[in-house]
Image (cartoon, rainbow, N blue to C red):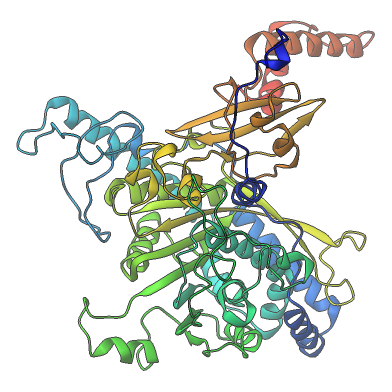
Length: 590
């Protein structure tokens, strides 16, 4: 009965299932808490480090190797990266990647997306207009700029690949102690998101390239092996119980009962891995990996190269043609592009080779250091897929929410990278630095590509998706740490079609705006709530007015400091102003 009060005029609304809301939050929270190296691996590393050499010698060798690695991957400054997608759209669907693909495609702006099913393509392959020829010429020029930039960086570190490929027993043990925890944590973070957002993916045949100590295989074994198949919560709290994991639900079935088994696909008979392959050119580092993965079932096969005669994989493929060979389900490339081959074209050829080994629905995972150098190599491979393969034959599972040009590559000051916290090895085994710090934050740039048509290609918008997992492919990605201020949060997200924007959420907004979720959101999570964009360019940098104001303050401060001192240079003169402006540009940018 309405009595004239405003609070009586409430419309009927459907109650939200708490379990469905919790599952949506779980899909969006792709980040993990502080991880820890498995106990059995830690025990083996303790035995290994005690038998190889003295602790001080191992630490000195490890610091020397990390100095070389840092000099290769962490000295490049962020810049506006050349993009082939600014001038030309991606190729049509062509199947496997080929180094000599040609074809005519339609132009749809800088987003670079091909027409959907049912849409007409008005382009003609017979005659190319002059505008398209100019666009192709500019795209070829951008490709040359990418290759020139990669070549210039490779020439500065000509011996890096040989240095990382020739390990002694001591250097292999030191490198494992220094890098195992960080690489393992980043791989667990990536593979756990794959399992969460692609529940139908159950890899049987896995290969890790540039495996080293096989941290990628260890992470995959911990996540997908039937004996170690634990929930995301158990990855950091040590518990294997995952009874409260919600099942695969349809978008509208908020009150649906869970499927048998509690997890999508777990009601079926789970089978383990059929084939595990690790490729590592260093014999001593491969011995460390064999020691750490000795209990795997089936046993991990080790090769010095992708094509090694006499191995089981080559014998298996010898009696089959290319179409009949058994392909792989998961290929992992952790920190492989910069240390395995030199030159961008050689790296792209390696990616093409590995991509053509994947089966339909297979996944390729590329991981590099979270630096501008690592992001540059990942960005070049990302544009390789869009340019040569076409968006209909693949989709980016993570971290990109679109198959368009990367907006972070055009800012000149940001790069796409993420972080994962992990507990270090005990200091009495190996000390990386301060003894008071037992948790480190490994920063990485990555790309997960799946060999099938994605939800963003099947459906035109989020509301058409049939499952919540498909719906999550339309959610923006939080690509910077969340700014949590008083009663409001600011999130820098990468969203469709190719935008890098800042979203604001305040406490005074309705509950559906996601303020509570924003307070808990971490770097790398997905944003599933409506977006109130407050800054289309996301991280707005110092304005011209603020630059002039800071320049005046700096000049005044220098004038006060120089007062009373003799000097031929007049304070506040043109020369002094130019010098101050150079220092200002050094710290604040143009």
